[in-house]
Structure formats: C-alpha cells, structure tokens
Length: 255
Image 1: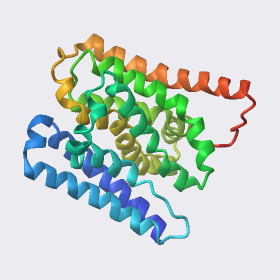
Image 2: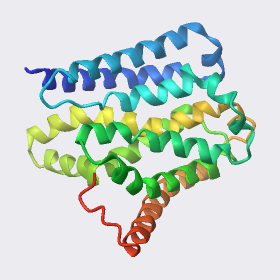
Image 3: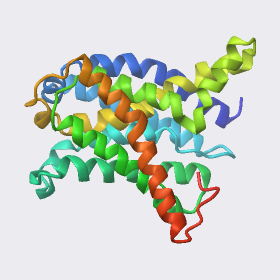
C-alpha cells in the first residue's frame, strides 16, 4: 500500500471509531466543556485526523480531507471560549453569521484537495452555506436539540447528497452484487457521515449555552429540521447559481 491508500484506510478506521466516541463525549455538552478528560479525548481525535492529513501530504495525490473533521472540533471545543468572547457573539444575528463564515471557510480543504481556483470555488458555495446557515439560525433559535440528533441528521444528509448522491448509487450497486461498491461504502461512509454531521454539530456545540435555553424539540420539529436541511441549502444554492448566471458568471466545472 502506498501513502495515499494507507491514509484513506486510516481515515476510514478512525472515523468508525470516532463516531461512537463523539456520541459518548458530547452526550451532555455542558459537562464536556467543564471536564478535562473529555477535552483530552477531543484533542486526541483532532490530532489523529491531523496526523493522517500529514501522512497524506507525503503521497503523490495529496489530500486534506482529515481536516474536515479536525476543523469543526477545533473551533467548537478547543477555541470556543476565545470565539465566544468576541463582540460578534452578542449580536442577535450571531447564530446566522458565525456558522455561515465558519462553514464557508471550511471549503478551503475542498479547494486544496481538488486544486481548484480558490475565488471561484468560494463564490459558488456562498448560496449553499447561506441556506445551511439559515436552517441553523431558524431551528437553533427556537428549539433545543441533542448532540446525537444534530450529528445524526447532518451525517445522514451528507451521506445522501455528497458528490451528487454518490453513496446511494454505490449502495444500489452493492446490493446488486458489486463487492467493490460495498467496500467503498464501508470505507467512505463513516468519514462522510462525520464531515457533514459536524456541519450541524459544530455550530451546535459553539452556541450550546444559547440553544439550551430553548424548549426541547419534539419529534415533529426534528422532522421539520430534516426536511429543511434537505430543501433549503440546495434551493438557495440553485437560486444563487441562477443569479450568478444572470450576471454572466460561469462556474461550470468548479467542484
């Protein structure tokens, strides 16, 4: 196995282990932020993903994918107190603005992975993350969720839409007898689940004090969050793409 294959395999194994670990660590985020042992475990996870990224940099096909998991844990746990001390957090729109910019900045790792043009890539994804931030703002201002709920919802959403519904396509191939498709699912699914799960869970942890003052979400409101996540980001992305096209901005081929 070369360095790239080793990195991808380690990334998959680490993700399989990190999913139950994060569910346990953040079963009560309030206690997690007070406990030194839980923070140590988060640091270990961040370090592990960062180390895999460093190993990947030694391969011919360098990739930065491990930072998709390390980054939200870094800002939502390790430097959360510093971020929350900023004046912006006193704004009524903080729950909209901060998640947007944190999520939008995370596209840097995709740019580095695919060696795409930075400016064009960021312009294209404004629409998607505006919609995502609007979902976060609407639901997190009104109801309190659990970490397990938001990580699961975000993770399953990502497994559905990532790379133009790639995993569902491989799933269908796998149940039709394609063993390579099943192997790919086994290796890729946990990492994609964590990456997208933390899109929702990162801001949830960062704004946990504010969210906890809301009434607990019931099943109907959890279901509405799922529906909103399925519709709003993709809809706002489509609208943004039409606006760009109307102004003659061609971003075809930008990943």
